[in-house]
Image 1 (cartoon, rainbow, N blue to C red):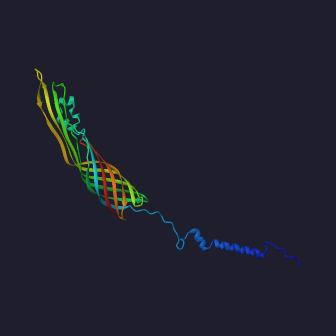
Image 2: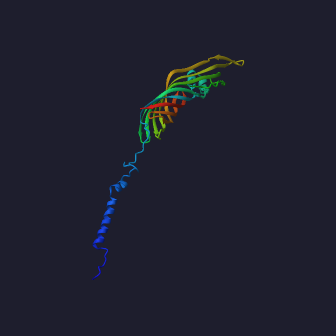
Amino acid sequence: MMATSWSPWNKGTVMRRLLVALGLIGLFFSPAMAADLDYPSLRGSGDTFVPAFPSYFRWDGVYLGGHLAYGNPNADFTTSTQPLLAQSLRQLTFLQENRPDLVKVLGATDNTGTGIGGFAGFNVQFDTAVLGFEFNYTHANLAAIAPDFPITRVTPVLSNGKAYQYTLSGAGSIDYTDIGLFQGRIGWAAGHFMPFLTFGGAVARSNLAVSVSCACYELTPLPGGGFSAFNFSFTDSQNKSGAYMWGFTGGFGLEWALTSNIFARADYEYVQFSPVWQITSHLHLAHVGLGVKF
């Protein structure tokens, strides 16, 4: 009887290996394995886990609120008396040769005050970026009163044969009663907080007053010595109630959400006004307030 030789390729061995291979392939592509590979499931749950998109507190929409204000008005009256003196002394040799109108009798000043007001605006949010527009109003009593520096001078004898003795003094003030800011805003949503920058235009209603007084004497030399004095003293002034002043503003602030639609805020604004009557002025304003977002 002849012995049968063993071969790895006989029919029984091939069938067993084929069955093992098919089993492995079926296991790999089973629903459980496919789910593990493509859509991870939460442990202990049959629900498919899907990563969520980042979420932020929404600052977009219409909002309004009220605030308290603290202000520091600054004004420079140094040259504000020059037009008044030039107008009063026009056509006089005294003005043309001595230029008393260039004497600085007033100076710069700053003060502090408070106010109350409100704001309203609209935001548009793109992920964490927030763009908006706001109107900000404050009713206040922010007054800047010029310091007075009286000065006395005596001129030499001028080309008209006369000398002049004069003492100049003055007064000036600005009282801001209403302040409006028209602002664009750029903010960054950081959870329940939003720091922001502001920029835009400003208008203020104010009471303005400037005056200058001259105790003026025209001195005529006498043949025997000395002078005869002619008094032409005067006071000139200008004032206006409810004058409008225009300028620009820029600042920064922070808002933080207290609930889904109520927020608190604090901000600082710098306001620069165009010169009026040769008075240059600006404001530092700080606000704290509460708002409602709709």
